[in-house]
Length: 243
Image (cartoon, rainbow, N blue to C red; front, side):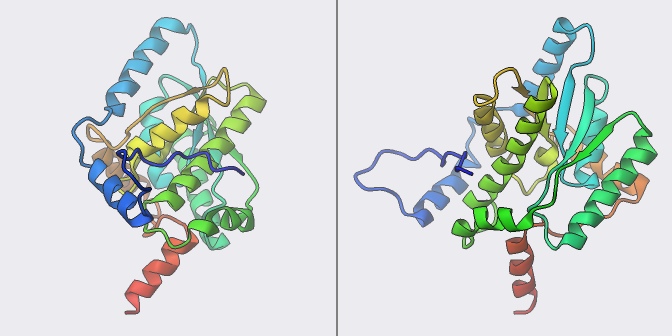
């Protein structure tokens, strides 16, 4: 799979930036004041949908776990005919992948009964590791993560194209640890490859989203994992705990 993620913009200079320099500039950009407000963009898109559609458009929602899905489902269900896509071959070990999947399915059953469909793509951790291995030494939240986001969002686009969905999005913008600007940039860039499918921009953590997520986690007693799921993240965490 070709890398679908563009690097953060850099200022013109006489020689290319090193990875370390580029990473420092990226971290500074996360505190910039001119970032796009993707929460407002989501509200504008919902208003456009209300004016345009006489039915609920079909949305394929990439979900990584029940914790991250709980609030986005509340936010979106009034406006979309939602199908969950569980495509997370990055998660390691496989027992963790299965546990998160089963907790998500339990949430869907208890909160939504049969209203929201569920699709699972095959687990193929080996392929994901081969894709991410060239950036194995990246710090958490850098290009390795961007490529991981892109692979899973593109999985959603491919499935959506094959099965006639109108929209694609991911719940990952609910997480404080993930860069919503980058996630939306990736989703919008991939939209260009899949004509007829729109990317629904979001920042689910905003305007009380995190608080409502925590309430729903408590209400449904959801398993809350303590790492993103990535093998590199898990190994790094174990190393830190043992030092």
